[in-house]
Image (cartoon, helix red, strand yellow):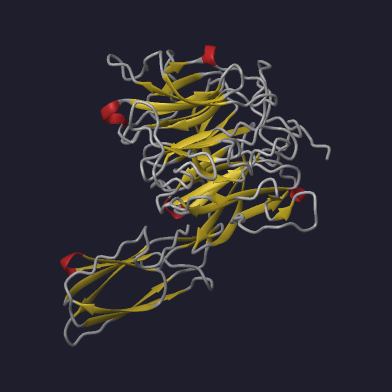
Length: 487
């Protein structure tokens, strides 16, 4: 198969930025009552009832209603229901906006009250009116960066840390535009990496206890091409500068091809460090790394980095050493450039395809030992054959073909910020070749509301990022852009 080399872009100064795609050489967020995002507080037991009717929404669209009352009672309601066993007292019914695709529905009465008593069983109707078109916009937070390729922030910290591909991490003091990056890099390891092909400093992750221990981790390709994970420490005298010397925890040989390095590392909800590696490069995984559990390439790895080096979590699928490398958490990936964890406990992996399909794998973060199929399958299609053996393979939750002009998925995050609450639970991504902002919702194991926001992103997108408040950012052509409500 003759594959097509695709570059992300070339900077104005002529330095080539990351290659991601098919280079031949190159959760459910259920909004139902009692779901992870909508806990139920029962309150004191009683005998009262409250009939709640929801109208005005399209069939299958979940309402966004909260009911609060005596003794700490709180419940989220997404459809017509009757609440029973209520204590006597006054209950408040708050109805927030509902987004279905790009249609925004607002309740005629955003807030109502009802009195429940021994002989009183009130009925309340929440009526949503005709929808308005909901739009998004991008605000430039900062500019003047050189090949920004990742953005992160420690918990409860107003700063933004931007990874520049050449080997530097820059600090933006706050997210209020126009913000200016500090002149002195937080970290500069440009002497340790190279930017040929898809190589460079590709991402970073702050230790969950960063405020206490000052540790953070970086993912880069060494000058010999080896995928490298190293730990660094913030300096004792300046919170905006890290100690210059780090400790290499893991080095994975990546000889030959300069592409398919993966690039993401992140801490999971279990406190373990996860990283996603590419298959080693070349068309159709010529070395067979993705399906080889003796290789760390084409995998998601899971490490315990709480000690001086790294340890193997005992519940890793090959922790005993039999059947594969003990670091492996999942296999069968081609070039998982970006992955992310949602607050619901789901793991989203956007895996760049070869020549036909792009995919997002969505599974519980606790699901160990999954095989996502590459290079036996690309998305849900067989590689090089009409049919193939898919036994033991986990299909993607979402995929799209290159027929619509796409060529390489750039995965992002599920929105969990507060600035645009209507976006809660939607996973955002873009594509290298189409360049627009897109999203979908994953609820109860099903992808719904796939939306193209008709919001062209200036330049070429390199990555997404989130701040400490879980607001969503896009990195493009030297800029940090924040996703926000449009007009």
